[in-house]
Image (cartoon, rainbow, N blue to C red; front, side, top):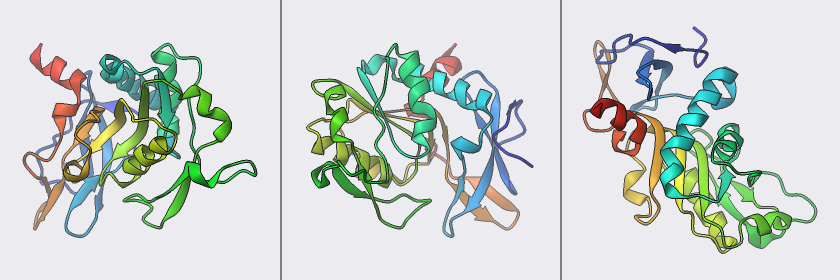
Length: 230
């Protein structure tokens, strides 16, 4: 099966599950995600730059609506997959441009505007860079950090650290998917997190994977809460 290409009706999410999970979306549809074995835990996967364009656009609009109350004045898109959504979110929030950190150093970059970074899917350490010529877009602004997924929190925390090098404390983190709750313990209490949708962690059983109760951070998904309360 080719994942992330369309939204589907509910396909049964209680489990046991074998290789896929139907994640609930704000409009009541479902996005079928592959299940991945991380050893002691299973997770639902989402690779944004492999998703259908229409899927990415709709999720980006939901993200913008979820983050609108945060009052962001500039969007900072985390490379690589957060930058699928950053321009969609920025445009939906009425902004003319956005800020794009990167993994490669250009000749005019300053070492002081870089931090080490890793993620759950790319654990090898590399450096995250910010172009000094774009600092004016951040100066005195409420910055919204945008990423595709928060899982362990390591890449998002690198984004926070990079913005602090530029003298900016993010007004919030916005993600497409909150993947379980492993990141919560280390996350700064003063930076709110919002998501378009959330998925639980999964436990292995002889019959397949089952969602771990209470691990899907649906409290971060205001559009889903609003739908459920209607």
